[in-house]
Image (tube, rainbow, N blue to C red; front, side):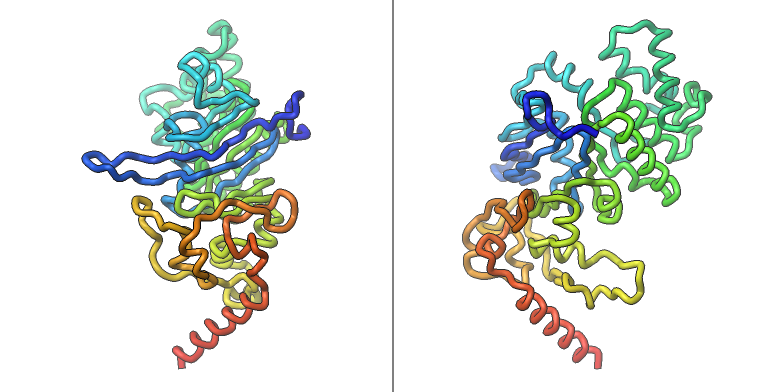
Length: 354
């Protein structure tokens, strides 16, 4: 794996203050899908983007490839602003940045053979002969663990796991430097999911490719990702290394999200966790966003400033660890207060059950 930077010291991908809004037909209102998103991805690493449905994580991934046009902000790939690219420049970019979609049945043409579909990006982006293209497709099938017979198969003849392997082969066909993986295992059975994760890790070891791994599954993100960004209602609310975010989450939303994960050890009950801050209430509308913190109406630790003043990502302790929270910024959210509120909730729960 590389050291994460190019020869000129630039990261592979920089997302700066990205905003994506969807206009509502017949209205002056918009749906806020991404709000002030800033992230960095280095060469050879995996950035996990976590969030509930509607958090903006899939929109973010599609903006990176300009499958969706950003409303504002910058996306820099190897130092060049993708948002300023014309059609020809975007075609070159897409040989370096590919995507694997959530549902393999929907992302592959049911009437084309798998081999032809894997070879299509090669035909578009590489000036090689038809015979060389076919050889490359067979090499890619071997890379993802599919038999040569897959070349002539139609998508309906393959299992979901094999189809997703074929999708990964297609994404790898142009030797990209970055792949956006949008919930790549959510449609798979557990055994197929584990096989795909092992495949992705092996490909990364062998090629040094970078991934943006979009998921709602914290266990998978913890297994495959180097760095993590947690999104809530269009914003990144916390980011840092996997150990920083999973081991020392600072934002109240991150803590609640992590506390909701079922532990395999029956002795580690959810309510006994030091991070057991469950959220209550409804998620605000992405059309009419709150004036201050987007979590304020659901947060147990809210104060007046949180409700009235918007926040930026600020340092949350160790270098590289950031959170979008006034109380974190002011170092005002202590474990003693968290423990006190947790015990109060446990007491109320016990009283109501008696």
